[in-house]
Length: 190
Image (cartoon, rainbow, N blue to C red; front, side, top):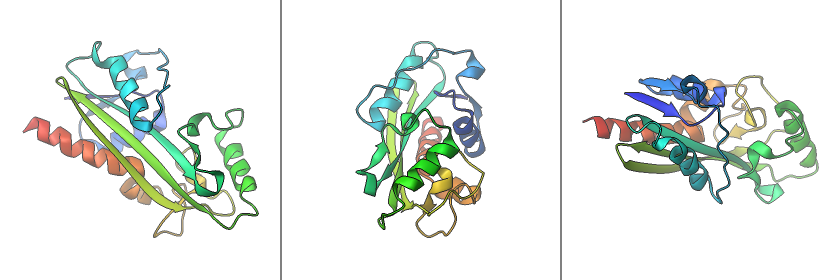
C-alpha cells in the first residue's frame, strides 16, 4: 500500500516516514510540482483541499493531507492558521527570534500546536485534529526539527521539540494525528 503525503515539505514527509510502516512518498516523489493553494478557513479545510487535489490523479493510493499551525495566547492565537506565512520574509530562525522578541515583556507564555489530518482511501475520508499544549521559552533553543520547534516546550517537559526530537515524535500534534491515521489504515486493511 502506497501512502502519498500531500506536501512538498521534506521535514513533514520525514516525520511521516518515521511513523508509518508503509511506502511513504511526498509530492516531489510522484512528480507533482504544482502548488496547492490552501485557502480554507480551518486546518481541516486546508488538509482536505490538499487531498482533493490528488484524488482523481491517484485513486488507488492512500492520500494524506495535513495542515498545522502554532498559536500563541499572548498574540491572540497568532500565527495560527497562517503559521507558514507568518513573517514570511524571515527564515525559521529569524522568525523564532522575532516571536521571542514580541513576547519579551509578556508573562503569558502559553501556546499550542494544532494538526488536522485527512486521509482518503477507496472513496472514503477520515478526518482527525489533534493539539499539544505548552509554553514558549525566553530564547530559541535547539537545532533539531523545523518551524517553531525551537520555541515550543510541551507541557510535562523542560526542553523544546528542537532540543528533544524523541519527545516530539511521541507527543507532538502531528504524531498524535498520525497515530489516529495509522489506526484507520489498519482498520481499512483488515
